[in-house]
Length: 380
Image 1 (cartoon, one colour):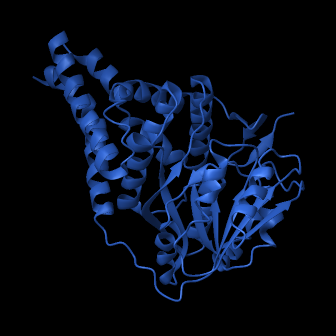
Image 2: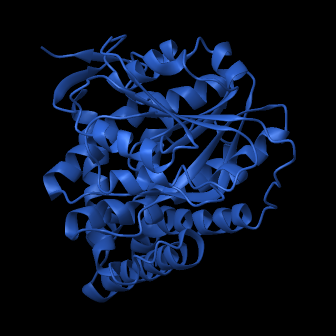
């Protein structure tokens, strides 16, 4: 009897985690949404840029079309006057002449994280006490600011971060990455939120009080780290401030890429998280469906038992993934790309395993070594 049950015991952690993530998400999305209190604080949106993204103009313009009652400063930060995205920013200023849009160009480097250098170089021009850092490939809905800023009515809130999704993909490679948001990243955040609370930020959108930012030493405290979003949230949390997660999704607008590029980015993220959260990252290995299915097949006494165990695991896995995609995340990528989830699971496990086999990463054409604690060292 025990030998017959072994394949089902093997899939139990991954199966349980899948169900736990769904019920954690239901609790989160059923929570009351904070309402914006008037007068609302003024906001600076600080946007570091480098090169062109997919639909850069439309991404930027979404921040100019906000239904928000207070002042909004849109501050772009670039390192080079020759950056191809700068004409797009000038066009934006002409299209929205009544908006407070400005650009800082400064090549000064303050550490190996050049994005953070852009933030440091432009921060002195930030006019307001609520500062939002948003990636250049992010697009938002008109109620974005009202939703995010509502959380700051609580004076203990130091940072508000937002979930992100991708609703349009360009073939297999981008679908592999985009489905990972609704089947892996967001479920992981939901479980972390319910079990331990939020002690990190998601880099797509991070709104921070100037006071909380000053308490951790400003952006300069992040200049040596690859995972500046994780570090910003973690440092603010350890400084005694609360971190809020808003349920309004921002859109990560992807451009067409090939599978090796996507996998290299996944590996970079994996190695960064392994070093940033070593214990939790190691323990996460038992939640992966792919190795659970392989172990179940190995332990089964016959083909029928193996197929039953693996079938049970993936019936639950694919059902939960579809519910996330259709009802919670609403990216509508599933069921069209449902057949891709087992492949996505396999690649996720391989990136997790390979993350323990080295500390080097490639980022924006440069090679770095990640040191203990998550700091970067450029490899010449």
